[in-house]
Image 1 (tube, helix red, strand yellow):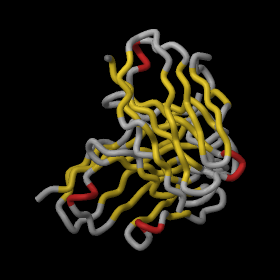
Image 2: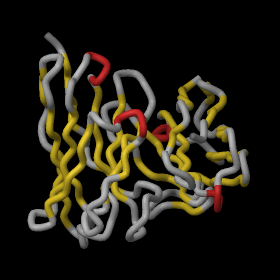
Image 3: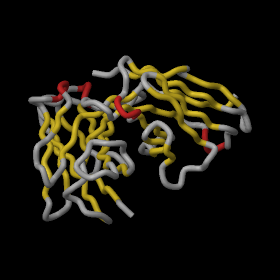
Image 4: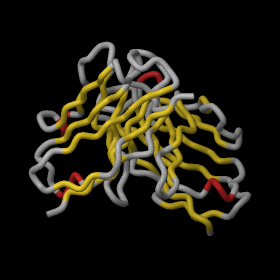
Length: 121
Length: 108
């Protein structure tokens, strides 16, 4: 069974950066897209983009380009999201999610439990 | 980008009743690449339906999806107590992948 284990909650100052990790187990890591989805308090889901570890080229949603970086470490089956220049509107739960089709950004069959990032002075 | 509009925003129903949730896309979704997710408070979303009508592993058959083009529907044939939650639709036919605003199914 595929499991996605995310890092713990973070509290950050405005203007700083945060790095969230997502460790995968139970299946081949490299060929499936790891997507990042965020949810602000009381709001809907927002896709930030994703990365297929074996390909290594991230796919960023336009809204986040220039402020976010996705990376993947195949040796540890771990994906990372780094978000820079944090502002209060970035306060949200950040989820990693994976599809079931290799080399494709498809529906999200597996989800991490989420990482709460709070941006506050 | 493809904008998804879900309606109604809130659906108030009793256990045993039928729930019909709508998801309308601003453009045709290629290959009917629409998914539906259920989310309960404090939990991650759970995939129910993908490809507009295929049930994900372990999803009860009271959940069904239908539709094509720009109009998609999630139907819960007879609500169980555990079905009261928020439901999100998503399109993954074109990047950026997008979600609808969600429909809350609450107990009447």
